[in-house]
Amino acid sequence: MPKQGDLETQALQVILDKGNEGILQSDLWKELSASSREGSRISIKLEGKNLIKRERELRNGRWTYRVFIKRQPVDLESIIDVPCVSCDDITRCETDTEISPITCRQLDQWLKISVPDAPPSVSSE
Image (cartoon, rainbow, N blue to C red; front, top):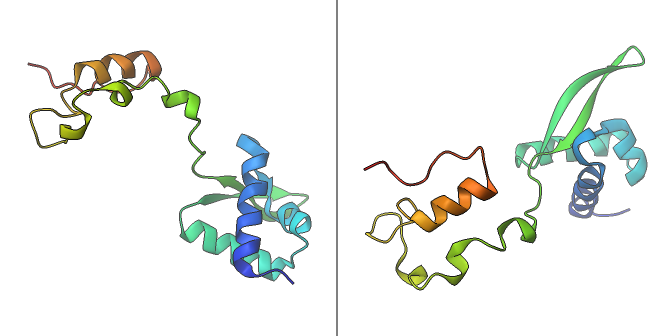
């Protein structure tokens, strides 16, 4: 019988693989060859760690949960062009100093292109 930590890791991977559609909790336990009791404990533990979310769903006349991953892993391609990587001031850049990501015009421009719905990071002057 696998350790609970191993089952948690396996559960996270299965949920992640299911993408935005999630997976029914009962189907997840079947894929992991876990009992419903083990599965419920793992699910509650992962939810407590803020790694997954569970949404109640009526399925075949019974209430169950659909499980979703809460945080998608960062895709390296999404941040490869961030200006901070090649910035000469990166070692001096801090939020409470003159050189700051809050006031960085290059970062603000990159965010406008890469994350169109992001609020502006540069304060209006």
